[in-house]
Image (cartoon, rainbow, N blue to C red; front, side, top):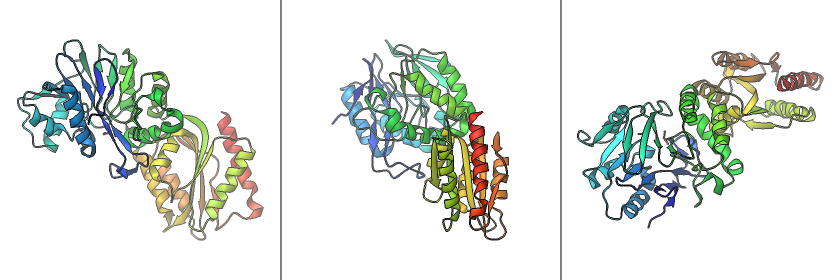
Length: 401
Ligand code: FEO
């Protein structure tokens, strides 16, 4: 059975959702599932914009068959070759012997690496600004390298002012029938997963995303069609502004995320004591996380959201608590920068977690450590609680800047 939705007169969503997959890229938990978007354009020439993951490919084939209604598929445009969007390539190549595959030269090369398909007579390599006429519609191609692989491009439908944005503007989350941003409560139900998706999948490539945003700013865009998550047909500027913040590593909000790694609960209690004092001081935007029980992708997402980060770690094997080390390694890998950081270390002998955390932060850009590190020996004794007030003062002062 077909399961499609019209986006414009001629553009149809032909994707589907996977609610069974536990981890996206075998890495990121997706309790809300994931949508794989693909798009069909009906014109004098027929076009499929990308395919989907193999888990939902059957639905794509039925959708495309339904829309073709006996016609041939003329073009498969491949904006991104990652296998979650390319499972259908070989199937469409064999079903439609005259179909051409349109993509960047790099995309065509990588398709050949993943799939045994003879593309010699069928690949159309396109470059920046090149156009493809379908009859009524004209497609124009824009290179978007490293958003999120090197072969990526975006396709702009000049006729319908629709941007097929590849991974950019995507989100984790399966659809419940509604696929448009104005059919759902995006800020309430989707924003956290859109931020987590951005920060962890594309976060490292802020410069490249900024380059793409500059190109998008010159286009008249009425709809954004990403490869995952809702399709944007209203309030585009609001979401583009989120991307401006994330890709420039500008904190989305003034707020404090407090992340602790605690073995017996004493580092945890110190962080809780700090959090209530911050609340007493009027800081409203607070979030406390246990680094052991929160997936690192959630923590990265929260660090992209907040201006201030408190990292508190027990000493372990003469270094950081291992999950804290994992977090800092991920922060470095994803090029996190421009945050104000407070460090708290704990250890019953040979304190060294703080030094290890500071060293990692030094290797990141524009990370400012506020004040002196708070060093605990096993617990924070009552007579030292005023040191927490000093930390609160530093954070409050910094938040006001
Ligand atoms: Fe959804 Fe980079 O693939």
